[in-house]
Image (cartoon, one colour):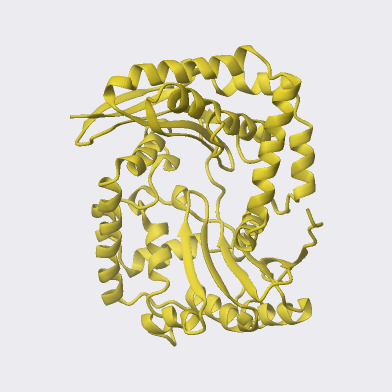
Length: 412
């Protein structure tokens, strides 16, 4: 891959900035805040996601329509998302419209007015989004599995909230959350595009350094602890039976994080040759949907396996999954197996990095979480440095089904 060259700087108010120049007519810009659903207080469930919606609903100088049209009028895209630990606004546009995007980000992040009428309308939209999840068990089970594993912890709460919590939000709650969490020292601006660096710095300085003052740092997140395996078996109005099983795992800064990604990829990654796919679908025809996921957070993580199948195959699927987990714990990868697994993960990662929008989101999140960019070369070196003995250790530490939690949606 081409060598990655990033330019980094920090504004006087603490906002960190990163840019990568690429030879493309299309540019990508993101604004990242280190504040997500796990930072909500008990009476704020869903508020981070609610704010992600309502910052587009009017500013001191624009109505909602004009906010939404600002990028779309020039063929661009404006979007946002909320996760457990961050809120991100991002835009894609032709490179000559950088200033338009930067000015708009300033307007919606720092000058939104949250009109009561618009907030009330958006509540119905979000509740409809919640209900769409309730109608989709293959999505809903992921959120409920988080709730099962991270019981009584903010990490276990879904980002959307509940209809009751969403309908209870008002302008005061929104502004209180923003004041507590939207701090300049926890903000990042990331850019990938074809623009002169001096010109980009001047634009960002104009709209963010001079107008936006430094905000005070808040208290740190409380680290998660106290995991105990638990099982929940529920009856749902589904045609399929759905299963989630998994264990708490490594944080985003743990040395063995890359190794667990490799093991997850071997088991149930996107490749059609993943072990669970080959066993459950290709050899036995028990399931259409099978995947593994590993989510890492600042202090912990979650490894999980998802399966959807006819209920008559449930026990057989669990037994076969346990068999594959046991093989990884008891039998180290051979030299050729390890080489192929590394090459597959390297290739998947490299292909993902070819997408400029994905790269912009990746470097922004990396600066936000680690205050550094982990380059392709560094990640490749970590993958190549993995040994069979280390992977065996990781498998025994995380992939022990005796330490797994289980959530089952059975068809009625």
